[in-house]
Length: 428
Image: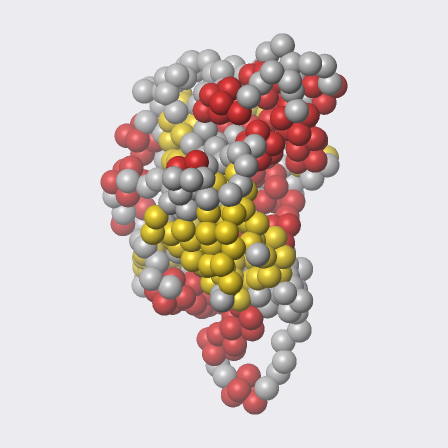
């Protein structure tokens, strides 16, 4: 099992084992501490970029595990505090600690527990050779509140799992029922590129004007994510309207593989046999540098963890805003009013689209975005190590210098062995 060293003090002396020091940096509890540790490691004398690339690409020391379900209680750092959290982990018979395995994140419903939610996915897991992580809500467990605390707690559990089991970063999948369905949507919409596929069940995105809860405005972030959404048609009418809007927008945006499966005679229920889960999930893989990326955000500090990062947003972009009531609003039915809300929300959201047809050449367009950053490796620069990015009427040309600092600052957060950027390009 990976040895975790949780104090920055361990990094204050010259590294004798850079791989161990990097593991210690990744294990630190906060982004601020991890970044400081990464910067210190990048300045270590005698360790060149090639060495760090080798270390990061082979990151992790893992032990073989007994097949079956493990019920664990762990302490997780969440927003500056420690949460005692119950985790149910399932290990398939084919798991080999030397080989990265797919991971299925299973999120339970209101009042439920992770170990119970896990049971319905054991057969699928064995068929895929996939690990399962099913955390239990450590709070009141009275339903999903669309809060930062809930999202951060779930991501902390996922981080813990990836530190202790050899997880394939390209094949992290998420599903959940009811509360877990809401949470699946919320995580996928706010953290583009995290999941290779999502299966939200009798849960949906949120359309709200306050408390930063509106995540339907980020629907562009899952355009390339395979989705199977299972939903009873006689469930909460507003939930059904939100799902209708979400898939309407996904169709408008030419989503890659998004399917809404509705059961006309069911309420807060679904038929799990409606999808061949093994066939669907076995094909799902995320791409760290896709040919085309769409990214939406309403806050620059929460603007994606893909290779594309929004740095500055226009003044009209905001998590919360006031909706102007017009005659069109007064005349609209419930669906019409929600479309008006969604249109207004998208106008207060920053949107960016970037595409590339050859290494080093990028075209970008956006609304509400003033500047952004690309994280690239040598394979995504031209033969002379250059990048040209056209944004609007202006082309930014850079020959960025490869840097251990860029690599390590990203790696301590994502510790993604298949995403190892060494340069950054700021536009404009």
